[in-house]
Length: 144
Image (cartoon, rainbow, N blue to C red; front, side, top):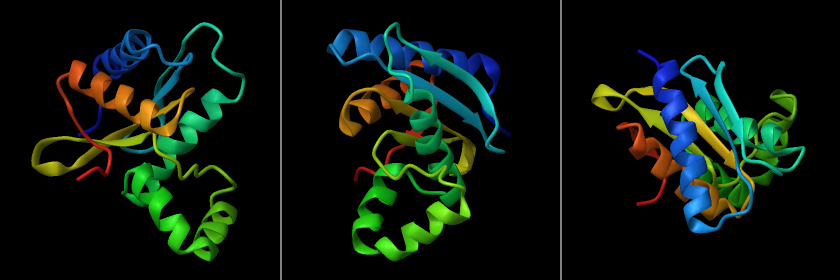
């Protein structure tokens, strides 16, 4: 099972709405399916020119490692050599910063990932979680 187009659109719309309601900087959201393919990309007006790549990198890294990007961020501080190697192995696509959230389906199985960029990592992550809830799905951002 993987995230559907309808679910991905609801996630993206809910994420952008959360950003507007919280007064966040213009956000960009990328939703990937379980295979790492882009399902939806949406960006708020005036979102920065690198935000798609950053949001993709947060989601793709989370999906590829099976860990939320907040967890990757914490582990990068403890093991920078591994993350240097990971950056090389992934062609620089992994962005280990909060804002990459795993989507979980029945039984906790990973069905995709959401990446958000535009504000602080904490704000990006919070808006992603609200977008995921808006779609009626479960997100794993790594917070206990």
